[in-house]
Length: 308
Ligand code: ADP
Figure 1 (spheres, rainbow, N blue to C red):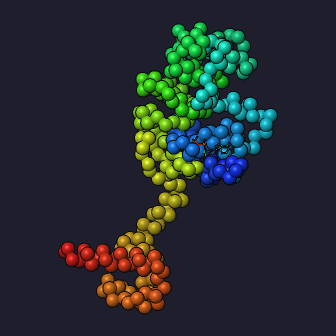
Figure 2: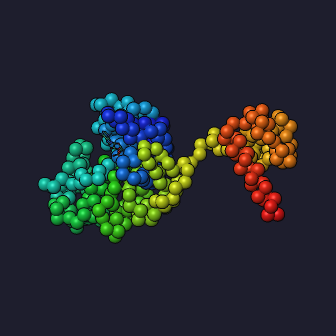
Figure 3: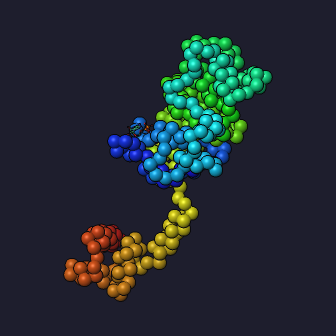
């Protein structure tokens, strides 16, 4: 459904906000985008909603080449997304119900559909009895749920929320999380930018972590679970080949390159290694780091010998 491929974003002034970012999202997934302040999360979101264009790389939303959407088709594209921004919540001069009606009106819906959809959305976020209140009369959690309802008005394929539980107490945060889960259960793909360990740990779902503009981990788990990004099948095949090579080498635990050099020089047992002089090492063309590694290997071996 969504693909970021080698995406980099350099802002004017030379700040590299994203570098070689790659990840894929399947339809119906629920995932968190986490990372410290300045990591590049907002930039990633702005690229996705086409408020910004990447410096290099490609972004696809289904069949749509996002950076290359013609300007006149941008509103149609954005209607396929439901977006809740960090600070922009509801229109202050309209009641909750009017806020949702307004979003549906813009989409050109008929009165009857507007009423039915508004009822449905208010029920989804549990705010039927607050429909006639103005935003300032609603609690923080209620405002956030109202903003979510409004973002759902166009029945988005992808729902994106930036810190939807920021500033909410744990109870209200959990209520918001329950709504997000409900949205996802209905088939909508959900992407949440969050700092909130509580909700991330509660979900135990996919966590894409970025730091200094790079994806540093991408796995299911808790907020603090840092694992390396999922490997592609080509990388896995290479790993297996490397492992096989490692199993076949004569001196296990020693770098494959050094093993190859020893193999060529017919150095076949540890005693021969122990008797190598510095000039032998130079003749074998072991570079400095290989010599260091060999030294460690020998020290390890002698250490084991001593203990056995
Ligand atoms: P996050 O949302 O993870 O806090 P951002 O995407 O906002 O991170 O920022 C990533 C980096 O890009 C930061 O160093 C930030 O200062 C920089 N940055 C963000 N927006 C702009 C901009 N419009 N112009 C220049 N630099 C920017």
